[in-house]
Amino acid sequence: MIKTKTALVITILIILFLKITSSYATELKWEKTVQSAFYRAMSEKKKILLFVGRDDCGKCRYMLTQVFESEKPPVKALLENNFILWFSDADKNTEWHRTASDLSEIPLPLICIIDPDSNDRVYEDRTTGIQHSPDFYSRLLKYIKKGK
Image (cartoon, rainbow, N blue to C red; front, side, top):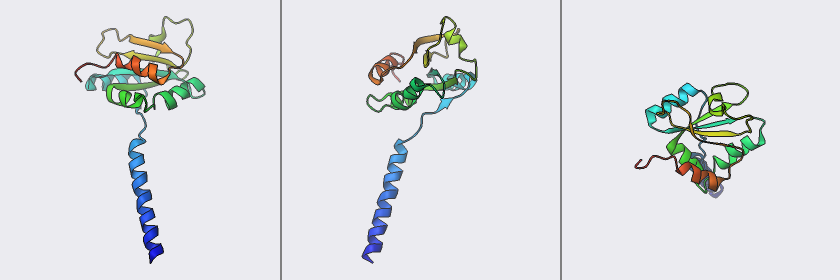
């Protein structure tokens, strides 16, 4: 009887732990096309963060798994609450080319902030390569609409 109660308590604790931790383990939602990114951004009144990368790019994986998922500083929360995220594979589509038209070479990752309300739809901010969480967080703060 005691073993059964102990097993039941342990099971309940495990279930509660998994439920609590899974609520924090949400993945960032990435749009895959320019149309879906602009549609969501315009309807939600948010700017777009375009991330151009490759699956086999170590710097791209670092940005996706370390910087964008950062809790300290809260890059992930800032992205989730204030931007529409658009991922574009550097080799599989060309929708992102407009944001890199003046670059002679494109070091990955390429990261752009785009205002969907801009008539010419060019980037407001563009950077390439690895960004460290504190610097990236500060950079993003400049593009959040005041009074939101």
